[in-house]
Amino acid sequence: MPAHVPPGLPGPPGVPEEELLLCGEIELLGRMVNSSNETYLAELTLGDAQHWAIYKPELGERPLRDFPPGLHRRERAAYLLSEALGWGVVPPTVVREEGPFGIGSMQLFIEHDPDRHYFILLDAAADLVALAEPAGVGAPATLADQLRRLALFDLVANNADRKAGHVLAGTDGRLWGIDHGLCFAAPFKLRTVMWDFAGEEIDAGLVADVAPLAEEVPGELADLLDWREADALQARVRQLLAAPRFPEDPTGTRFPWPLI
Picture (cartoon, rainbow, N blue to C red):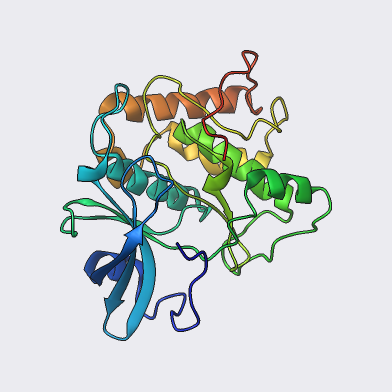
């Protein structure tokens, strides 16, 4: 599977991203072979706009004991959470009602170097001054701070599957998180490779960003969760406000597998 968008495929697309994801004509280019569920690389075309996307149909999901079917809704919910926080760390993602294999999530493909996963980025963080800060996004100044922000996102979303390969350094100069189908469970299920900030105090600005969620979960995000999951999200935020530190894992077992 090719890792980079070819020269003839523009990015960003020439139409609003969600419009392209929702309405673009779909051509499947191939299956992502390392995914546990069926995941496809697609080319979307709408008028003169064309871009790659990642399509995850509900029909391709493996049954899970601790998550109901419909992981595509959690992919959309993660994007909405990222947008509600103003962090822009999840690529634009929609629920596509009619795809080649039925309903599923459609997420904008992020051009990136697949060899630069979390562990590589962490090693670089001490020396790298910054990834280029995109105008209007308000990204933290350093790579390490961007990694901390993504770790906090996972804590709020209760991400049960943050592998190293789910952290992308985009060629657009931004840090992205992908694969959020196992988020938002009501019981605490955090499993992540990002334990390097455990015990650190969380930046006050990031705490301020998440604080409104303690009072209200935005409507469309709440609609994608059941009431227990929405209540649990608010409870996690309230706990963060009371003790704003990254959690620790005294068991040493809260890691996804494989790690990358």
